[in-house]
Length: 197
Image (cartoon, rainbow, N blue to C red):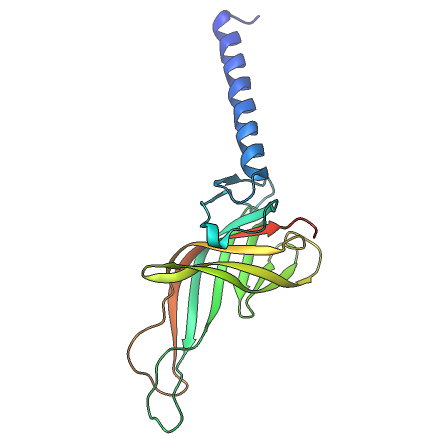
């Protein structure tokens, strides 16, 4: 037999569950806005989607595929030495190497740039579409997916945001030919399914 107090607790719990479902539904369906995207599969971790600067938002109507945070990562730079010089600088592009965890489990991010799901093997490569500078860190980016491989968590991704960056900036000073420098960085990667053209 339920007491009045038990009935109130039951109703309160149902109300909180309904509100939480509504928040997840709204934030998961609202393209390019802040929210939390969750996945109940083992190994998945909810990741908040930060606000996205206007210049790097995915196309209007894009749907959230997943959000992932870098748990360990580096940007590796190679020394560029001009012809006839004995020293150079780390002025070239970087090669990423990172482990991510998020809504669809674990992702390996590596040169290409490429992202591959550890869970199902789906893989995408992408190229830079737009950037937004960040003081003291690598820029936030919008990347356009160029290739897909395999079926799985990344197979619907058309665009990727690199957000909330920290670190990863090329070292200053001189270097010698062939020298490399791996610089730790952090970021949140958000994958988007763009509407059909």
